[in-house]
Length: 154
Image 1 (cartoon, helix red, strand yellow):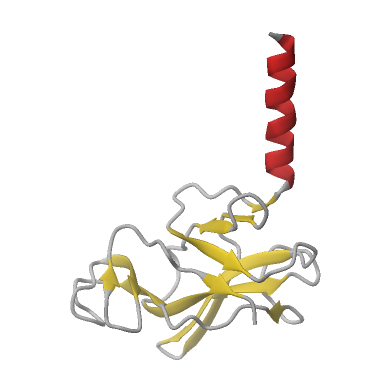
Image 2 (cartoon, one colour):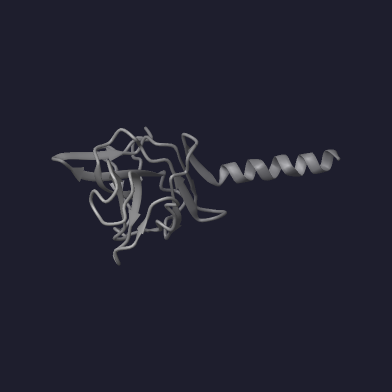
């Protein structure tokens, strides 16, 4: 019995060491795969956008980046940003403050997908609902499960 507990504890430690946690995501609003990023880059996620004359870069939300076991990530989305279009970026956190700010380098390509925060249904695109939505380059809209927002290294 003690051997099983020891094995479970060791596996749990290994699992946590393979992830980057910046605040534990509660809602896991958007998820996807990370491809081509090396493990030693102090990676974090942020959403960026320019809406209503205001530039927004928010990297303070809860997130998990797992480059080793699943190759994926989960990110909570903020509720205190202007309505409009955003994208998720991977950046190197140069000063290790868990925020996207001056001096941090964007390491991900633009995948063409956009997160849309709408104040009401169909505000920016047909099919969007109030709240967060995910759009793709073919005009598809996801309104509930915002997954497959995959990010590739530049």
